[in-house]
Image 1 (cartoon, rainbow, N blue to C red):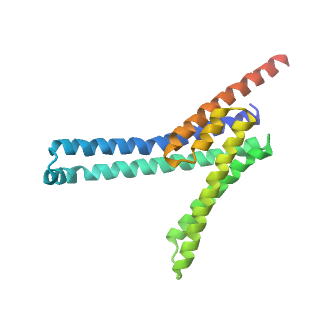
Image 2: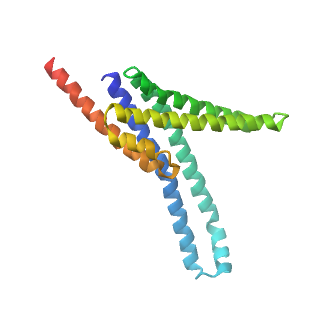
Image 3: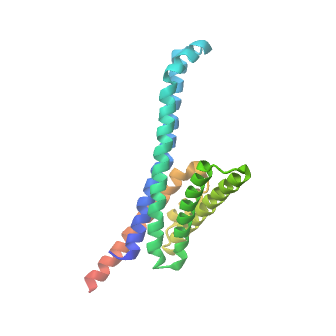
Length: 204
């Protein structure tokens, strides 16, 4: 398997994980909403009864919310790691695609900086603010570079789904749908590349 197919394959896996990371919070929200509506129905819209019943299910709602957030964050982090590797492989084919790898590194740096900011015992509060703002800045720039990286992948391989998905990912609530489009586009690119590779192999 050549580096190009490997790179696209890794991006495809990362996009799938990020799709799940975007869908999981939505699933959690819908689950909690159904619990809320169920309690509301049982209480016959009586405020005092609702409060009494909701107290019993509140820990479940909180646990679901935390679980979904943690799961989504872990999947998101894993996807960024895979993106770094995928864009790194494609950089050997087209240096313009390496911008996505730079974006992934910036996101890692932002996470490390954030933990330094949140766990530091600095005397001057203003320094903590500077570190925190730096981490946010790196996160935003890193995300933009990854978006540009995917857009360039779509452009290079003439796959509109990848380009469209990368643009849609700017709208955070749509990130699950956006990366589903990216995943589908990358899968199409991978199939084309494998087909071309098989044709070359047969000729040889």
